[in-house]
Image (cartoon, rainbow, N blue to C red; front, side, top):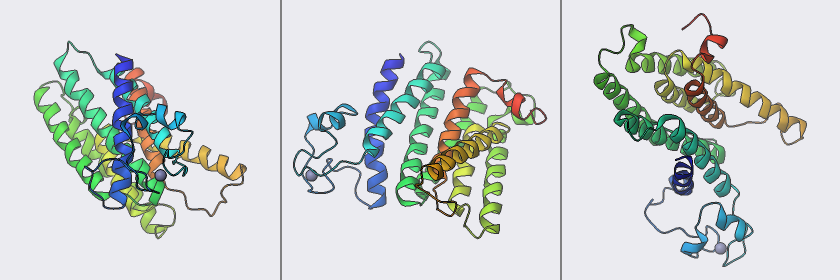
Length: 267
Ligand SMILES: [Zn+2]
């Protein structure tokens, strides 16, 4: 099962690469893949995720121009995330897991597009964020509706937990962005916060933010140690939010008590 989801992730990942790049240059999502340098069409056998990149030696077959390593890493990341989500959430015999798995795969795809887009351009693709927000809200309402009676406490309802989580994350980034005059965080990060808050809900959003900042700090220190960045360098933050969110979705499924270890007083 894991292998099937991994392969699905590779195919979707190769599509997400194209989505992120074409959104940036406002190009149609439907045209065939082509080399951004010489415009030559990519042959189908040169379009196989991971494999083609390695076999072609990261160069275009037609003009020899270097192909961005982004293609390879985004495909691999999507493959790994899909494999983990699929093996942790999906049970072919339980119908509810079909919608739940689909929800997490779609949200992962949206988050990966935000990751790539912010990484490339230091901007947040707002149409993608809003599509995610609407889908996350609709799914939460649907999940509460079909699982009606399961929750007794306010925050046991996915919709309420999501709205509280989204509001907390939005406000947190909004304030940082406002008081730092967008030097530490952009306003776009607040909307990404809203989205991931809706996806993971309260109190898991606290864990998502903690892991995002931890991953960001480790990564930042590594870049500074390697001499690639200084303390003053601008670094896009959405990629860390996305990675932190993935960690939480996966770790919470494996070990639901995790939140009590880090934030014992909120849950
Ligand atoms: Zn080319």
